[in-house]
Amino acid sequence: GRRLLLHMRDVIHAGDEVPRVRETASLSETLVEMSRKRLGMSAIVDADGRLLGLYTDGDLRRKLDDASIDVRSTPIASVMTKSPKVIGADALAVEAAQLMEHHKINALLVVDDERRVVGALNIHDLLRARVVSHMSSTDKQYSHLNDFPADIRERAKRTRLACFDVDGTLTDGR
Image (cartoon, rainbow, N blue to C red; front, top):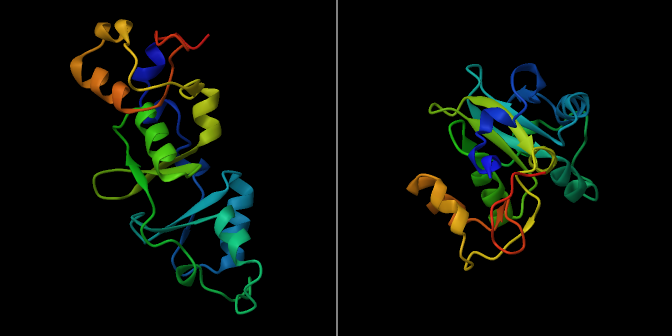
């Protein structure tokens, strides 16, 4: 059950582990950064580290047949996703799982109140932390949730991805 209480700081890649390039980078420079950091994405940021966009492995796969894109000369700013889904640094990890499920995405950037990129995570990070283990129905009774504060209970009830056993009881992730 304590897995529901994990915060973003407990599961994210932070600091130099976060793939990021400036908006002036080329697509090839971005791909090199993505490959080095091995998260399948790169944040595109301004000089102050504020998020301008995102580029993912999926974006690359979708553009493979586009003859107008030259990997070496195409500016990343012209092919990035300009309004990517993000999550706040103070959010719970289970909220990241909910956001990923709702939007059918596999990775998220973590931003502070000024939209500076402070971290990144993908679905594998949530699986490793046992935040995501299986699907459970939101209309079941979760009797053990009563041990948590009301705001946590409400967050957990709204999500379908959490640490619940198939009978609806909270599990400690073991």
